[in-house]
Image 1 (spheres, rainbow, N blue to C red):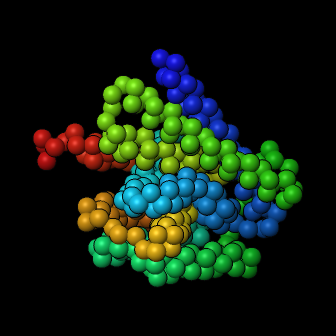
Image 2 (cartoon, helix red, strand yellow):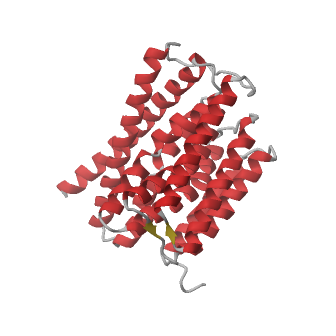
Image 3 (tube, rainbow, N blue to C red):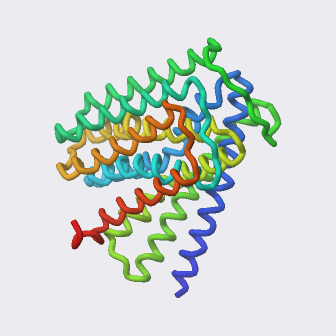
Amino acid sequence: MDETVFDVAFVLIGFALLMFGGEALVQGATRISQSLNISPLVVGFTVVAIGTSLPELAVAIEAIESDVPNIAVGGVLGSNVANVMLVLGAAAVLGAKSDSEIGITRDSIAVVVATMFMTIFVYFGEVTLLGGVVMLVCLFGYYYYTYSVAISEEDEYEFEDSWLPNKLSLAIPICAIGGTMIWFGAELLVSGSTGIAETFGVSEAIIGLTVVALGTSLPELAVTIVAGIRGQGGVAVGNVLGSNVMNIMGIIGIASIVGSGIPVDVEFQRDIIVVIATSGFVVWMLISGKEFTKNIGTVMILTYLFYMTYLGGFLDGLF
């Protein structure tokens, strides 16, 4: 029972760190964008997205070093589905509004390109070392391109109010502190939730598919909800798009370099179809300028829960 008390405490502390860290990261990113005169969408797509992808990166590297590459690949695919269906869905249900910036189309196309990269690797059965290098080069190239467009003032945007003073020297460390809180918050939440699940006899497979997989997407959920509710839609949407691109191009790219290539199990051919469908849906919504209403958000969350239920084997008797 004592261990259960500690696990519950880890979960509560983890949630607190995620939410406070998310607030700090969003406000710091907003002030950075204002100080450098860069679109909040660009900052969300880069700085915030990289920060909230740290848990996935840690999991992927550990998986490669432990010779279990399926965890790395599965974590990225599962996280991308969770980001677009659960994270944006929850944000919509809670009233967070998506922002329509010119850059949203550009960044949506980046998600499509990243998904195409991953689709090719899944069907070829391997992410090669060269493929990982190419993805990283493309990722940094795109980051440079988005920054160049931003400073050339081709993007149109408005800055939101923030409680943080408009000082770059303060915004950068606040972002770093927020990112650190998110990192440790995710670790505590996953650890505590896993302990609780084990205490009540839930199988390791179900734990991996739910708690662990969701745990790496919680930073994105925290940042997106906080940013959306505060009206900072550029950071919220940019964070989700950027995280999905970072997950594939950055995390899988780095993991393939660390492991000198990553084998991809044929089973992931099923899951890449889900990634294509869910990412395609969200990209279509954003490019066409449609609003993520509460009803649409509810359907997105229910679709994600159905997918998790299917993976957990609870629908085996029906399909």
